[in-house]
Figure 1 (cartoon, rainbow, N blue to C red):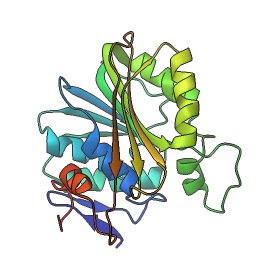
Figure 2 (figure 1 turned 90 degrees about the vertical axis):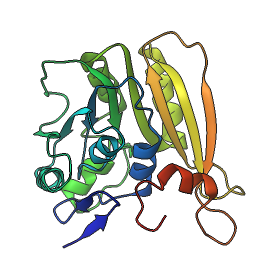
Figure 3 (figure 1 turned 180 degrees about the vertical axis):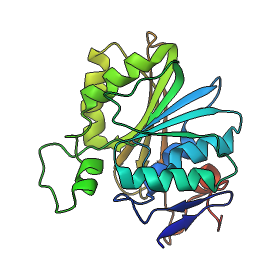
Length: 233
């Protein structure tokens, strides 16, 4: 069985096309959970982000939506074997997902390949390519399930992040927090973690993060961000 062990929970991922990634771990550790009571995890995969957020804030009400049946199986198993079996995993696409509440925070590690060559695995293609969830559809979904003070948190490659920002601005969203991630201080950023909200922008909080320091060991900032989760930190 393919799996990944964290300090307080384990991720079983044998039925999932997209495995645990550094992107997901960074986003789950970075997202701001202040004033958050209800969270929606869109495209939850193995349930990683939902479980990370529940570890950080155990009283959080979490709903997770996933289109792929194999990933749903893994997510439900991971939730049931965790200290937080109350996470609700829904087998649905977000476009047709219906709920009776509005969420304070929507979190997503979205597909980002657009009009690019696909591989032979349909589940992996759905998880990686925007055919199953375009940026416009993600923003539309957020607008439907959010209230005036809600926030949307995502991680994308920097090029795709610029496109997402443009679409978000056109939809009336403002960028509240932005963290550019690079592998080392000598290299350009490759990932953007972003938090949007529906209010007119007042102050944008900008930060940067390097994953590795000299010698290919984790940087102090990366350790500080992720030490509550990685077993060997």
